[in-house]
Image 1 (cartoon, rainbow, N blue to C red):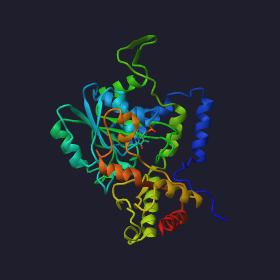
Image 2: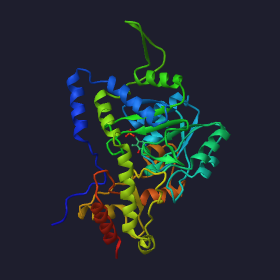
Image 3: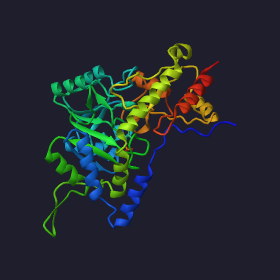
Image 4: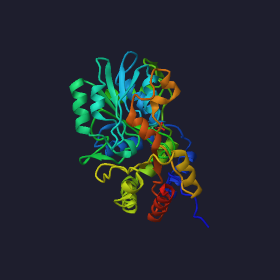
Length: 374
Ligand SMILES: *Cc1c(COP(=O)(O)O)cnc(C)c1O
């Protein structure tokens, strides 16, 4: 009787991509090779010719970005509490100190006034996150970074296809990190890429992703920096190439679905139900997610359970990072970032993926309204 389960996210892999992966598997070369190179060339074209290197996750991509920027022990890095924990973990991973600044209640991104207020003489970098694909005010961000001589590592994991005033995210700025994890707008199953500024940064990124090795001639080899095992495979890159062919269609479709969400919720939804819709940005956002902040009248767990009973999957992105045990141990506690704490407790992600139809949006909105009623 009830319609089939509607997940909150689902990848779409076309037959050509599946065939391309089969070809890689049959080719005898399945780790980093020609497909990775071709994918990096495509990405570079997309980002206006800037240099791009790929890795095996968006997380290691950000860690490598911090290393390229020379961030380490004694340095402070400012970020948002509302992100996937990876964003702060990479700061700890390089031995630096994470500093949080509260979010803007409307955009749910880091509040740039609070970011600026959190800068100290030890601050070396900032990691803004573009939650759900909505960028921060990029002019203001880079004005602050210039003024205080800070490096910027953009956590653009969710922002492939987003833009700022007509310029693509990734096509300008400092170090820009993307993820190709399965739920992202474009996937390689797992993976990431970094846009860098100079051939020297690209070279160092290549070294760090493969044990710090430099090869020369037939058997020349040296290791002069500490690297790890962060390279993307050709299997993953073949998926990425197949996915990337649809990037514009993906962004267009997501914008249309988001538009339909707003139309279905209607202009009186917020007032009637006490919930908060996202910023209706059809210029800059790639609509990686469509997120609601729930009213005080229902817990998120209760909401999720009731939506599940209606066969609709709900995600939550994200609980505040500073309240995880690992961060509490470092002195963070409740009350420090009140906006993030309120939003982090009440934010939910509604179904949003390429293969969705308008009818699915209508089902999701009907279900939200009926669960929030009473
Ligand atoms: C997905 C994501 C990451 C991590 O990317 P992985 O590829 O899963 O390592 C980091 N930050 C944000 C905001 C993300 O959405």
